[in-house]
Length: 74
Image (cartoon, rainbow, N blue to C red; front, side, top):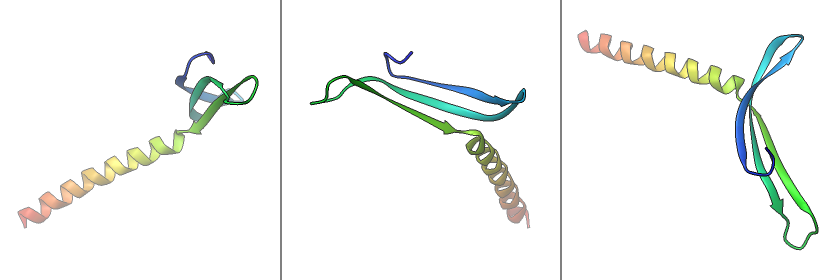
């Protein structure tokens, strides 16, 4: 998995419950210029809140469209 750049999403569990949904991105092995050996960069982002905010944004957009339609009818 770490040899090549990769990206995946996974649920994090605590006491058998899903507590977060994360996106993990790995750079794969990187050759460091002028430095012996290799390095690896891994980023882990909690996307749980992002998904919640996208849902709220979608609901607001629907309400806005409904309000605009009702104003046009007046």
